Length: 401
Image (cartoon, rainbow, N blue to C red; front, top):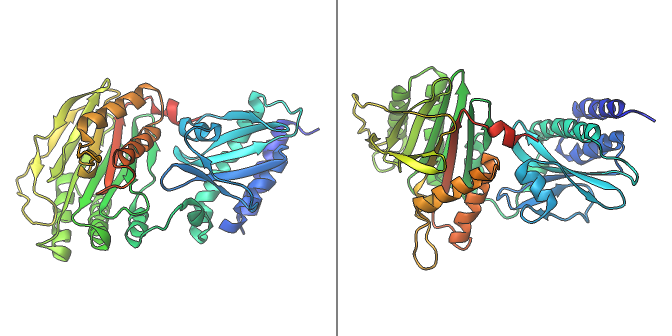
């Protein structure tokens, strides 16, 4: 009987060799074949939907149903990034599907009765599923199978464009954790965010384009593209902001504008430098409470060509474990049926409570997103986007299985 190591190697080889000529429609078969090499009798891939409420199957078996994230062991494997075992005719291992620390879904691996799911076999499944995640990301560029599976409703054209602008929702290293979430997922228009880690500098921006619909998305697209172009050409922070201001004004001014927070975190020292352009200020959260509202530097919105050439940046020294909470006004201004705002206090309380539970930052934002939706009974009046930044974090301990 082959050893676990031999089975693992066979499963990895199966995926790698088949990947060269595989498209997205081949993914269910590749996943199933790799599971067979591991000794499984059934292997099913589930992807998280855009609203992060359901795990939807990517399978050639028509009878397989979506699984809720909340209230299921499959959902716990996804939300807490922990393998979980259930039992059918044999043991069933639910394994989180991660591309880096970006949560893509889970994989259900069913073994025949009598198989012992020891630590070695669990680790083998995790290794194979990690390669599956890489293939999902790369193969999804060649067709629409993955995109169709993840959409629970009809995505609008503005949202289609906006999602193409976004970076992965989660990035975690030993020195910084970054995560963002947007809502409503399939109708978002003007809200966007971006980040990049270059050497010791984490570049972060959260933007809110004026208006709604496709025009707001196009405005956001110009802002994000200008931001990236300046950053990638080596421009400093102030120069980047001024270029964004000029590019937006050239295309849309003077009647359209973008608000935002554009900043840089030196991950070696903890210094956060930023400029707030007509946007709600970032919150500095330490030990579960807001210790400072970073509102001492406020400039005009981008696109109005009102930025003072002598404008100074704000700066704040973070302590290890500090979090910065960036948000658009749609988060705190979400109203319930009685007209009550969601508010910053509720925002911070929810973030602190989830952080204390030891859950990943991405899960904190998923739950925040659903809390905002619940506050407005599922119908947001405005886009709501939140970005969390944590310095010298223990996040890798929470974000990896």
